[in-house]
Length: 224
Length: 336
Image 1 (cartoon, rainbow over the protein chains, first blue to last red):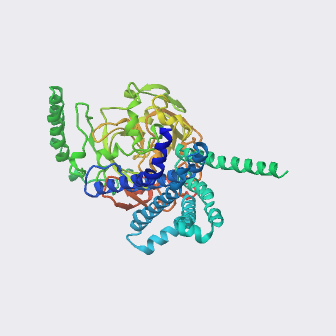
Image 2 (image 1 turned 60 degrees about the horizontal axis):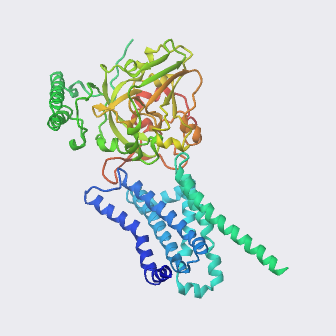
Image 3 (image 1 turned 180 degrees about the vertical axis):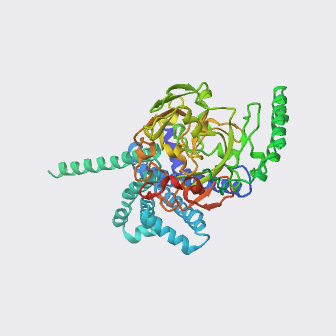
């Protein structure tokens, strides 16, 4: 009984701020490392800080996306409903990290490589998107994230109606697959991390598939 | 007829460290070693460091990034193989590595390579040569003939370094095995010990790592077998105790921790080519005009430089004068 009371308090008062700060933590850590780097202090970004930044932001975005997709199975398994209150903000955090990932690529790579020229950076972007499969995939995943991010407010759900809103947000499934493929095609050689992300994603999507099939057969049984 | 052409990388006679200074250098090194033996390690190394920067005005790297010269510091002669760009600081050269046997992160090798046992070390020599068999490293490398070569290193991932290697020309080593005329290629293999190399638990590549060169490439004056860098023995993460350095090719051709040398008549398989043939060819010459399918090779990030420092990538990594003849008439996009 005491445990349930504790969980209720957590769900009511702590869950939202706690989630916010946990999600902000990787970003704050990265910002702090850049402050250290730019002020000439010892930092944790290594000898190629830009590369480290790209990887850190990309990994964080994918992992937060996977956490978002794990919320529903978590609720089903634990029956702890308050967790649903933070699902949207977790998903939105994945978007913010993906946006930072894209901006870092545009600003720290393309813009600099083009000699600080915006048109040069855009030309470089077009070349990358057209010729390099992992960037094509990354861009598609990011573009698919945008409608989900801009409709992630209560007012939008009301405006669209819950059903169309939910259908739109099913985009998260193909988008997550594309994001993991983006990672896999980027990696040199047969690296383990894209497989780990892909494996977790397969479990999370597989769970939904099984659940949907089961519901359907149950509905059929009911109807007959 | 022997015509001596002066080449762009060759320093002038006047640039060479005067002999008396060079000898002095050794004396100070020895003094440093003696001091180290008496327990004054810090004092000895600081003196050797001061000497390092004084004797070699081409060392533009920050002196605080120099390794500690110790009693194990190598005896070597300087050569005209130098580049004008500043040397990459020691901590970057030894802290930012691709040695996937120890993990795929750049800092994994520095963290885990110490688990590799490099003494004693032997090299198996096989194939089309008069002298084959298993040789101790000391019988393969003449440690009394070591020289320093400051080479560019261009990684296929579009970053670069400038590294002062210590070693011997590959040709000198290969000739002593007396390869026969059937030896058209030479293949190399990296040490493999799964308990010492944690990265090999996952098939990132088809272990062991293998590489190869055409025989004329291997006999080129630039091809080098390094046993040290920055005046000291190679740290494990850089491919101890002996590694190849072929500066006109992408870094992965410069195979590390060599345990096998084979003289073969057919083009040998090479690890990255097996993994992704469209991305990594057998030749793998640095070529800014041939984009890697997944990124441009036109420019490179300079590691250890300022945050945004980049340079344009040069054909053959700037070593065209020495190696372009090897590929006369070849389509280097096709034969990438």
